[in-house]
Image 1 (tube, helix red, strand yellow):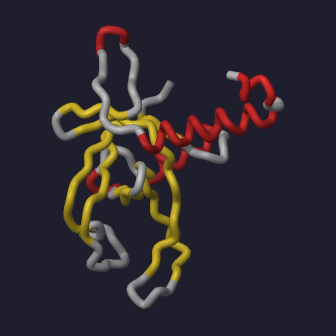
Image 2: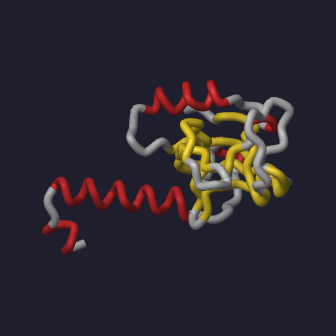
Length: 146
């Protein structure tokens, strides 16, 4: 507490932002108490989870390491960024981007109902570029808005 008293206002604000980011990205699964209608950082219910996590965009990189203009979305969780596979999601790319645009913050933290799956990232009916990327990815069931 003594440290907080000696810190200036901007230092306190920076500390709060850092602690918020850490708690959002490092939180493990917690139980959801439906009696008070609140959402925790991560909730597991069967195969779906309700999480609050940063959403990041990365440019698609081909196998030959050529960086393209095509941007892909990832959900940042602790030590891993999960690819968002829109062709299996109930939320499309435009809906997610519109929601993120309305957040107004540099750090785009969204509360989502998601499911983690394992398989091919690029196998979709409408994919223009196919790679053999495999592993865990997320699908978004819905955006949970305040």
